[in-house]
Length: 93
Image 1 (cartoon, rainbow, N blue to C red):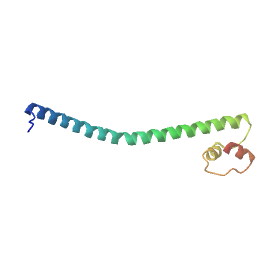
Image 2 (image 1 turned 45 degrees about the horizontal axis):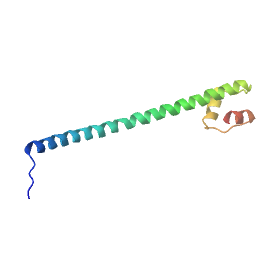
Image 3 (image 1 turned 60 degrees about the horizontal axis):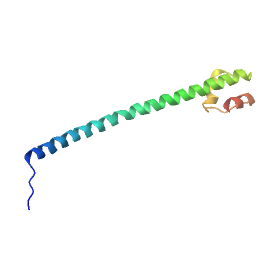
């Protein structure tokens, strides 16, 4: 027994397949565009967190009457330098 598919059904399937293929290609293209955007947003978020830590540390320094240069306190918060004395240990946390 041989089953034949009407021409209209074959055309419909072919057209639908083409549309899905185009959709899939566009989707992959858009996903590829999002990766740099997400990476950029992550970097911006990390900068915001670092700035918040520095501002919080500055506020603590003022409350505890600790004297140090602002560039030195930034370096201590960013863990780019070792504390030299007790006050700097307090800043470094």
